[in-house]
Length: 166
Image (cartoon, rainbow, N blue to C red; front, side, top):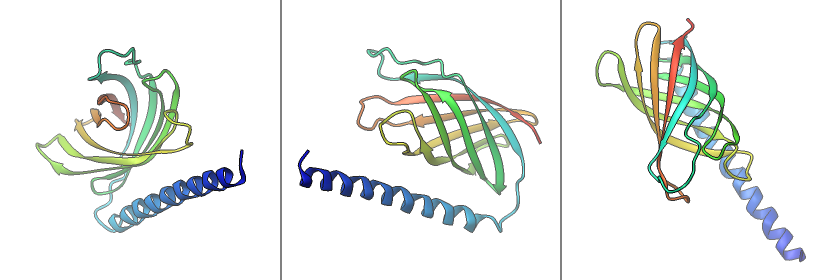
């Protein structure tokens, strides 16, 4: 490897790290800004169960076994995290925040999730920002997340079942 190639790779890697740090600082500022609002300390156990890929020609894993946690930190805002088997059969770990400010009916909430997930690229953290829908009853619920197509020409919908812990 030439000296210039190594330097270019290092600069590209440092740029990606800088972008990750900047995005996390923005997310952290957003979360901290929302904390003084009405508190929400509910905790949910989420079980990742299924996905559906619009690209039907590839042999994607659509049985996403996984487990996660959601913990409310402010009105309409939760920390989310978990682990699951992704579309490629690899283990993925995710962490981030969910913001669900739109209440369509008493139990139906619309918003977005943002965070970091691994297991898809060589990078230890692939950032995501996806639209999300949650249906929540007294002790149980369902989450739907839509991952729009990026470099790979497919869109996927992920399904989670969840139980309220407190």
